[in-house]
Image (tube, rainbow, N blue to C red):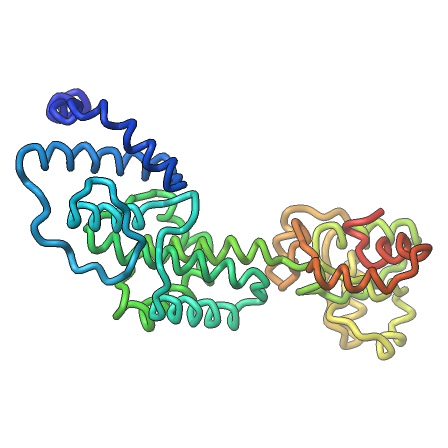
Length: 334
């Protein structure tokens, strides 16, 4: 099949020597497309040269719903206008190729607000997220005009992998964006991945902090290891480590959960009206999964807000700074 296809498109390669001009154009306009988009634009270019050489030029332009920067490449107004919109529909690694559109900006902003209000993450990168979402919606509009899109089988699993986030994005798109921009399942999946990327970027240390009291009769060294293990895996604060005979002190403490690694202590706590979380002393995959389902937030790749961090440490005396950093951010400083 590949050999037959190659034979059929042989006439196109008479224009291959003009490929350098396209490359020069990309360089002069500071355009940089990914590999898939680059192949696409070369095929379009060769087809256009072949078409115009046969005497077939664009007579009626599509009615493009968005405005894009217009480039002069073919030196024919209609050809250049279609070419410019096609460039804006591709995945550009350089500067974005689209102009301000109040409708798309409004839809993007409202979508971000809708999702942000329903998840446990604040988008500190909201401006960046909005620019990326706007740019993607522009591409969706243009690709619909050109009747094409790029299929990626990795998008097939987004609904399953990030079901809650996907449902939020899908509901908003179908009820608020669909009349303006009809998005298909894969495009909704792409928007879901865009949101997921920024959820990961905005995992702020202490944002979903769980305050935990550990109940154990074990020696200090053993309970300290357990505490450090918990701190390593999850965004938590150990409020206190108490002996089972000290549970009367709980009324003086503010905490979210009681935790133990003893079946006996767990039973005693329940008999005394204290719900608790019982896990293994050595954390296994099942313990990590169990705590995650209970709302404990993973401690991996947590970030600090730069401005808040700078403002805080400026108030700490230099001699106390090392101790402050180790006590306040034990997962970052030792």
